[in-house]
Length: 279
Image (tube, rainbow, N blue to C red):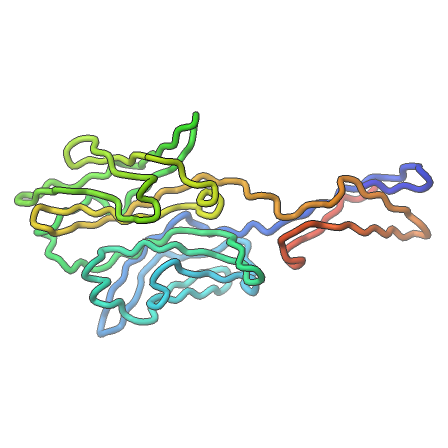
């Protein structure tokens, strides 16, 4: 921004717009669900959101919102059970993959996402079901030289158990079934194969994806684990734009008046205007 009088430059100033950078402290969280005396509870590590104005932000669950409630207090996110899960849910699943989404109340714009895996008590005897070596496997999605890959922290391995023959292992997810599949590396050991790129919209709105891994025995008994794939950070499109690249104002009688027009999809309360001092 340049201040002039009759074509003579008196000084320069820079106008900077600082947008809030809200984010979850972790890329994913893992919790444990249990029921005692007909009361359901969840044990989970502390969850929090950085740079959040609680009066402007909502946090929602992608699934099971009838059973779990989120509460934001002093940037701490608390997840509680509002009622016990049905037997249909607990008998069918050993974990629940959920996406937490922070949105701006004024326009429901997505500000940040994270993944949550809630482990459920097993309804099947451990001796009868296939068992993964870990409850949760972690991977990182990258795109280089026009090829997409998922690098796992460790291979996905199913324990060898006497009397159990694993007939199929797969990722249960309808939304991204065309993007990822398990690829056998050796007996009972798997990696992730990327069949197609994730969409630009997914990369812009999600920070991680969470899936359920299912191993099925020849007796039809299933074992479960979770897979969390961390996505690269993609710069979002600029949400605030100046209509012009240069603004000129006159300094008279100790006052500077300047009108600047912005093209923005952000609320005025979400924008800070900063200028450098004039010399």
